[in-house]
Amino acid sequence: MSDAGKSGKKFNMIIAVTIAILMWFYVLNVESPVGNTTISNVPIEVIGADVLDSNDLVVTQLDRDNMDLTATGKRKNFLQLFAEDIVVQIDVSHLTQPGEYELTGRVSPTNFFSEYNITMTEKQGFITFVTLQNKTSKIVPLEGDFVGTTPDGYEVSEVSCFLEEVEVTGPEEFVSQITKAVVVFDDENVKNSVTRQLTIMYVNDAGEIISSELVNSSTNKVYATLLITESYTLPLTIDFIEGGGATIDNVYWSIEPKEVVLSGDNMLLKSMKEISLGEIDLATILDEERLIIQIPLPENVVNHTASTHAVVEISVDGLETKKVAVRSVIFENVPEGYSAFLTSGYVEIWVRGEKRAVEDITSTNIELVVDLSGIDVNTPQHETLAVPHMLQEKEADVILLDYSVLVNIQKK
Image (cartoon, rainbow, N blue to C red):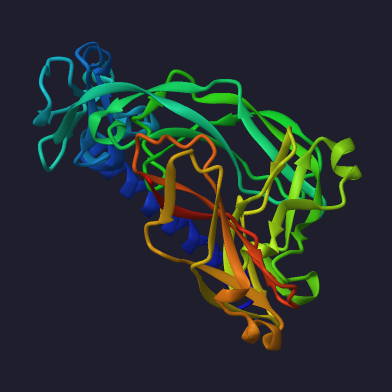
């Protein structure tokens, strides 16, 4: 057979198949016009929520968000169906109390289905379980936060909001957990201050975000300002007053933290070289001491270091200390006609100096002076001060602190 004959035969076969398909469609759609089609994921729409709102109620849960519907009718009318135009409406306007309800929905738009004689069915009968909760409101503080980064030499001085508080409204289940509202700047490598409108978030005591589309506030956004300032790192120092036989050469000390990061008054901070924690009299440090000192700050200066206090550890080395029981007492300005004596009979004081010199000191080298000026003779026992003095020149110093002693006075 020639090539022309083969081509003609193929063409005839194609025509025959096409006609058969057309006839099949004709029989399906004209001779047997009624059929079914499935419309999947039809959304559920709650109506009447405004009535609930007036009763301080709110829908918090539907047992499902969509339905699969079956449409029955003439096939040619299915061409008029557009899934995006179809919803299942659940009417809650008649509900007046919190709880769980079984409600039957209806397909919308109903006039369309009547016009085209299409029947809609659903395997669960359009039933949806709806949960209602009481709606409540409360006022919570509004705070700003920064979770981004700044380059070296820059610090966040302040995050402030144009509002101090907001009113939150929603289901009691969620609102009861909210302790504050926050807005967050998350800028990276920020050098300059900025003001912008930010979305409000709600958090609980643990700082966890309470996320729900059902929670609203008097405003969902607020303007906030992120204030960036230059920062200065200054060392912490301590000034020692030599005494009690101890000099700066006998002292070892450490300060933690060693430095602080400050921002604020630029002119003032540029002129500062250190932050002094104050003075410590070495006469009061007998061996080892651990002091906690509040870090002093100039006015209008912010400390960005984690700690507001410094720990100062001091030890004295190269000196010997010991206690001496002193019984020699001189009473000055004793009222006329009265005598005085120590209740305990002696006072223990500390002596410190080079080991060899301290070993030589005994109670015979020291006396106490007690001034009884202004003493009330009608009170037999008094707590007053005793000042120790060396009777002889020694290489070791007595720690010249005032000792509190109990003194008895009596008539001669």
